[in-house]
Length: 430
Ligand SMILES: O=P(O)(O)OC[C@H]1O[C@H](O)[C@H](O)[C@@H](O)[C@@H]1O
Image 1 (cartoon, rainbow, N blue to C red):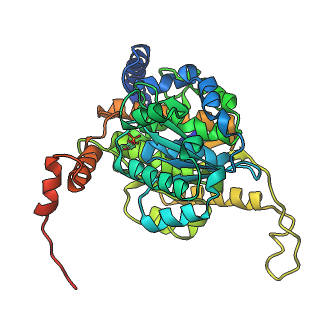
Image 2 (image 1 turned 90 degrees about the vertical axis):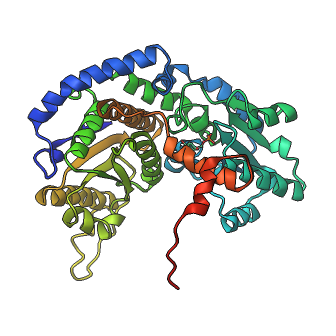
Image 3 (image 1 turned 45 degrees about the horizontal axis):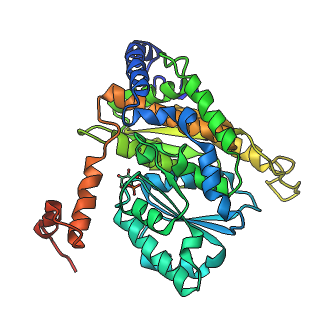
């Protein structure tokens, strides 16, 4: 990824080149810590070793029985869905099996989706690192029943990705299902480049080697200076801006195919860095669409934001037909890509003009190699930010609290968090 920090210099809030140079000493120390964590295979840091540890052949072998699939339905949530969905939405071609994701338990949505799928030609991909997430297991039971009702032997159509033990692992063993393991030490939101994120890409026929090559390039490029490492430039600058008041980070790709990437980024940034009263709220926007809605706030609202503008440098373009319609001739002979690029640059300039910090992130193209690199570098940026902020990047106690409360309410165990539900105050207005 290519990072241009220029539009964040001297904004309000903003950083100066001198302050980034001072911060670079802390970046060097954080880089040492990250390298030591990777060498010792520590929890979380291990995710940054995935380019060399992921077993692509194991993924290909696990999905080989499903080479006739017309659709792949992933049942998973959070880190067990968003990485795979990012690849699927970015890379999908017209002849690929369709990818669907059940990452919610909205009953109407689940029923409608199941009614629309050719279940006898669908692969069911059940993913849960812990093997205990209620939404995932409930959806799995519902899909399994639908398959049975449709006369489909679900054991022929299902594969599982989970930890070495737990409910899902036992189920896979009991029914002799093809399965993959979630690698040790890799938290869900850092697992896009592992078995968790790559199995759907394999079923869709995408180039796993190129994804890995892109992430390996990025891993090889990590150095002790933010001025030499795009991932650290992004992580250090977003950290510095948050400390100066930019507590919201609007992630705004200018490519429809990267819309899900912004969702993936939101989980990575929010769950990893939202600790101890610190963090930076990820907002999701899409260029150019959200120029016509959210940009007003970004430019003229509270001075608590930075905008990350993302775009591919190369894409297949489409010409705009010539026209003699009054006032529109300037569009004719141009292209949709020219227009989108102009919108990107105009938006960046408008933010600079009003003093709002922006960071420009460019990738070569929306392809396997660039995505492997982009996801790896955003993970490295996040880990660096967490080191600089001294937060526990790889845990999510606040999320676990809510999971326990919900499980307790459903009678899934004795969880004291569930008591808080009865203790809430209500103030009803009808
Ligand atoms: O993969 P699972 O164990 O089912 O977890 C799925 C998700 O559950 C929780 O909400 C965690 O906070 C997320 O980080 C995780 O990605």
